[in-house]
Length: 265
Image 1 (cartoon, rainbow, N blue to C red):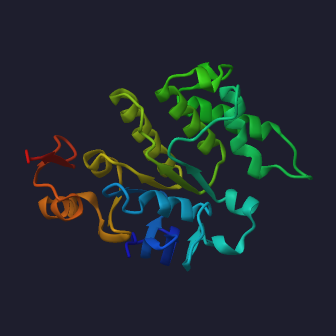
Image 2: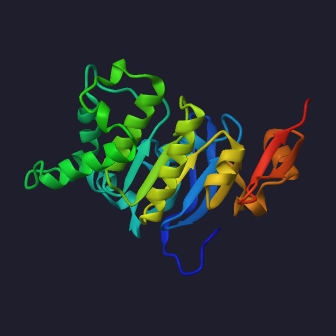
């Protein structure tokens, strides 16, 4: 279990297990991510990364274990209260037919609505701030289904940011993005964490994960096999264990982040 001295825990997972019929997928996961930090989960396809995020967001049932977000027991909350603490950007989300970008992002404010609290200026400001942060303000009136894949991905990210939760879960947030927008999104993720939120994201690019995360979590067969600062965790042995690949580990100029260069098979 990893903690950072002096930083309160934004996410605490203890003994978490989840399965599909006849097949365990998440096996006894223990993890602590401090507030204001970015954790990146890496691992081969089918190792349980996405199911772990879906379980944390209460979209998949847990068989055992506890999850606390911002100090609250997620299993003890109703769905609306839980949605004020945890926001998830899933893989391949689908927007309602003909919805505009602004309309999609407004969905992020639904957990904050109720009989005694209707749409307010604060909601509108949250939507506008999320659009601006993701570079989609000029797309606000466009239909989501008429945008490119990269534009849609940024709009979905805006919806998650508008939800304004202390815990943000992102499942492959850079998919469908060109290299320039990958850099922009990962920079935005860092800014979101710097503002005090806890971010847990799944990434397939191990080098990008190492460069953008405070905490790197490697999964295999539903278990965490390594976790820690990327510079301490990412090495040839980890790449071999998790992916079955021989690789060289270089260091990026400037920050010295690990860069994984697979060798030819």
